Amino acid sequence: MPVIIVAEECQGCGTCLPMCPNNAIVYVEKDDCTIAEIVSENCVECGECVEFCLRGAIKEV
Ligand code: SF4
Ligand code: SF4
Image (tube, rainbow, N blue to C red; front, side, top):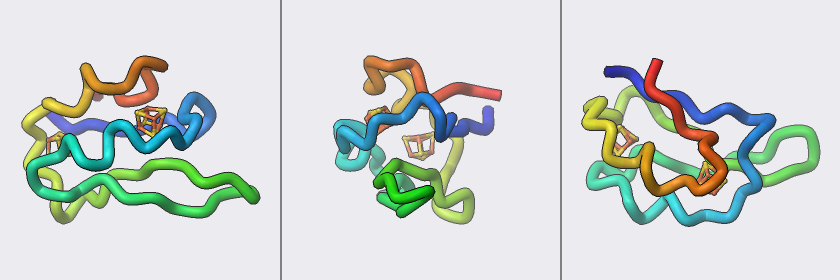
């Protein structure tokens, strides 16, 4: 199932970045904030990262 990171809910804590086995989660600069984003080309939609965001910013869609 595809996953997304809701930019408005991400605090850029970085917890999720090393949790992806495919290194599909990267930092990006957006509106002067550093947030996490999923590189869809590298994501295999395993869903493992969803549970690691304590803010619930990573969602299966
Ligand atoms: S764990 Fe959640 S809040 Fe932290 S960088 Fe990842 S998506 Fe953002
Ligand atoms: S769904 Fe899996 S492959 Fe995609 S970003 Fe999350 S942990 Fe990485």
